[in-house]
Length: 188
Length: 188
DNA sequence: TGGAGATGATTAGCCGCCTAACTAACCCGC
DNA sequence: GCGGGTTAGTTAGGCGGCTAATCATCTCCA
Image (cartoon, rainbow over all chains, first blue to last red; front, side):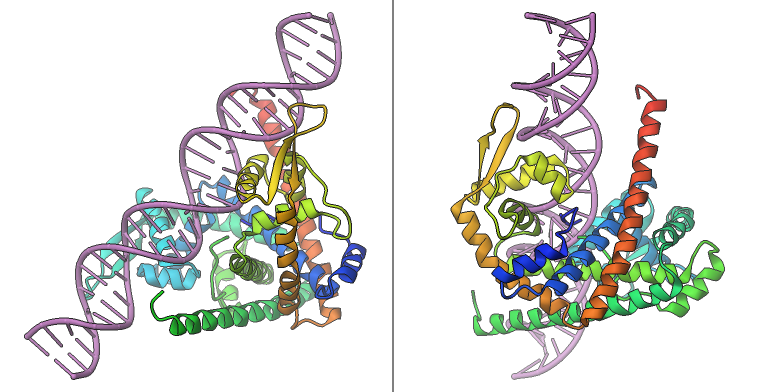
């Protein structure tokens, strides 16, 4: 969870500041700060909801990934798969699976063939825990989005997708620069 | 930073899932997941930018609060003020100010009158560090929001404000429940 | 066939955020 | 004045994210 300003600067202040900082684009800045704040608020509500159910967002995500295709069968997966789908490093998954295994919500087993691989399975207790949380979680989402009409939700999704796409391409660029740096400096 | 799904479920999957979970509102769920993902992506880009300048988002926020009114004079403030404005606990501010003081970007001094209070000051080095980062930070914001037109930015701000307002009122409600619980259970 | 490099998972250590508990100082009413 | 509740700041401990380094295994090619 990120540290964020509780009360955002007013737009007039941004205009004022833009006079001193030619790089400051007031409408971009306003949109950016509002996005960070709304995302942060939503995350805090989410974590608060999960805390009431004695789980964390990270653990919940792993359980959801193992539960997978909500209509289908739970599917054992490797830590690397989970890391890829969750968008975190494998080391983070190791830590989460450690605590989930301690609480008997998942099990770890050696995988098939390749002896480096592990397979993480959802246990019956894990499935029951998840299914006990899900309805409340869905209601929580619906409550948070309640002030938006369906049309507004569609608009919001469209605009957020534009921003997320841009963020993605910026991340890509950073990775390329890093790779290029590694090539030009073979052994640090 | 929160662990989040990299690829969101498609809308058809949500419709499918809604048949099994009557509490699932597909458009709310889609908007919610997109908000969390976009917020998370933006935070990652932000942290990545700050890392390149050897600072963290938390430390940057504290420096900004001390720099304050961008056009005005740096203003010493108490840790409690900083915590309130940043939306974190006082303990978090203590930790951030510890490292900022170690790096000589701020100083801590006993405050005026009330001997419990401390005043955190921005040092010259702190101000110079911040001013070296700000232009790039503004360009970073502008780049991320570049795919949106001015009209879209205004719309986005309006919709995000609705959601943030709702999140705020939900948090308020939680706090009231907690307070009520404390009253009805005088000594745990 | 055998060694180099790639790819699994894990470990160790840092950081920021949280809550809960503590200390010191303040204020207020008797 | 002085004792009780309140408030400021800190400390201690936990968690979850990250990177970098380690170890085991696999793969591929000379």
